[in-house]
Image 1 (cartoon, rainbow, N blue to C red):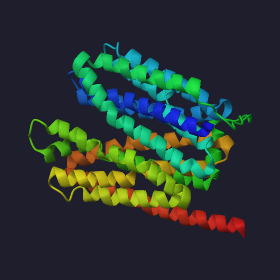
Image 2: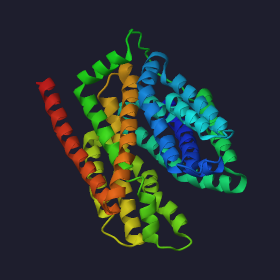
Image 3: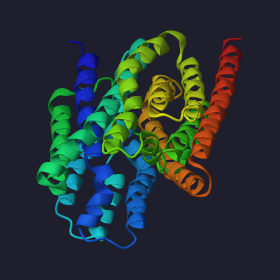
Image 4: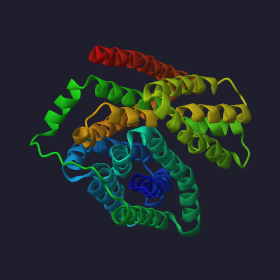
Length: 399
């Protein structure tokens, strides 16, 4: 097997395990707070725990991107995997919310396995296969996100949340060992220039194409996270008061992930033929229209079908953005570019739930769907302008 193909399949498994370990434990943090005796201001603590890792990750990602360009993406993956193993394992032994908060901050500062895997695949795959490879990594993350809650819920119900945390740590360790023994990083040229994160930001600011991608990433991430605080409750309301409402919510919630597993590789192959800009435009437009269309139906079946169709289109977006990071940067800056890309993603992840929570608390829940759809359509307009601007730039260079 060619090395790039072996790397892709090994990292697919690794990303699947890491994504599963994340979704095994994160949705159950509010319940775990109750189990360790936090009965006052539980919602505040839960929100703080969720946002702490995003905030820490946004700060640390540019630094780890610089380290990756200097020492390689594989060492970055190994470090991040071991960090997740330690954090999840220690989480199994916490006794108060302050310890849990400290571990969540540590997770944000030290993790970065999936962005590292994306960077390694993006720099070690033939250029005519990058779209397919990045879409495969996206499907691995989506698959883990689907399986994780089922595993976490099952383990927690049988032996408790602490064992679930420990199991997540073991999954992260397995992913790390796979990288150590089976991933080979080729064509790596270390960046020997002395610099700083401040200079990295200056270089990024001078790259108009990269800045457009980073802006789109923040806008898209904020858009999709806007709906997260209200989506589970809305699904339960549509499903009625039956005893299976929670199970139904879990199934419907996972439909976009299922769509991603099926359709992401197809979008990736098409991106290699027609370009990432066109795929990004189609994905954002379909995602925006699909989000608004979800409020048309007042029954769970119509909502579920629309939710799946939304996932069919939206699963094209983030692989296309990752591909544009590769296309718009030189190889010796790519680790730092993906670090900045992760920071943009984390910023959107912090802002989105705040907007959704405020809107959901003031207006009917359908308003959140409309605002999310409008934001995605706004991102579509930006992507269209970006594609035209890039084409003009390329024509100017040719002439």
